[in-house]
Structure formats: C-alpha cells, structure tokens
Length: 110
Image 1 (tube, rainbow, N blue to C red):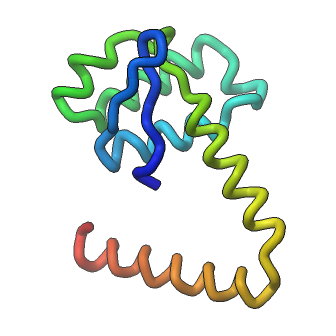
Image 2 (spheres, rainbow, N blue to C red; image 1 turned 90 degrees about the vertical axis):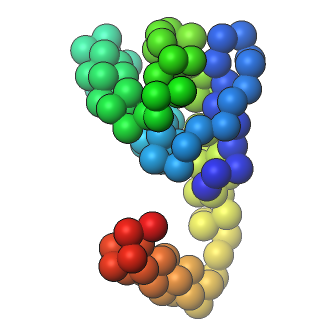
Image 3 (cartoon, rainbow, N blue to C red; image 1 turned 180 degrees about the horizontal axis):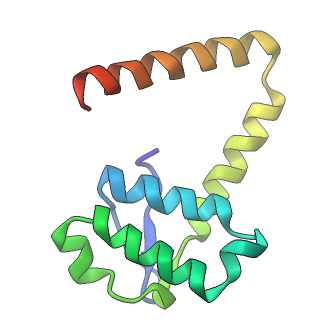
C-alpha cells in the first residue's frame, strides 16, 4: 500500500514504515466489526502494534485514542470496490502476481 498517510492528533499526517502500515491496515479492515470495538481488543491491538513500530513511530504514536484509521479504511473499501468490478481473468492475473510477490518476499526477506 504505502500510499496512505496515517492521521493522528487532529489530522496531523505521518508516513508509517511498511510493517507498521501493514498492521494499521489490518486494524482498519477490522473496524466496524463488533469484536474490534471492545476496549480489550483496542488495548491488545495497540500493544501488539507498538511492537512492530520503529522507535520514532513509538515516540510519536503514544495514545491509541488519537489515532485515526479512516484513510486506511477508505483505501480498503476502494480496493474492495475495484476487485468487485474486475473480470475473472483480471482476478486470476492479480492473484498470480500477488503469489509471486509473496514468494519473493518469503525467499528474499523483503
């Protein structure tokens, strides 16, 4: 993804590292689900999320209450709409390239 800014503290934007962004994206996709709205889930998520953050990100992102995942949520909604309009052949090609990317990352550690 790496094209969505993370919003925090009254719409101040920051760019996240790849791993931090991936985990934030997972949370954004869970938003709206009942389990993700509980305080326990949010606390557990934030604790786990800080483990993948860079030290600079941990200095800046100190309180989950000030984190805004709306842009991430919008990004994933748009991607879902795009997938729904794809033809079967386009979906197969996309899936094939996604598998190649995952295998590359697995073997080369990127």
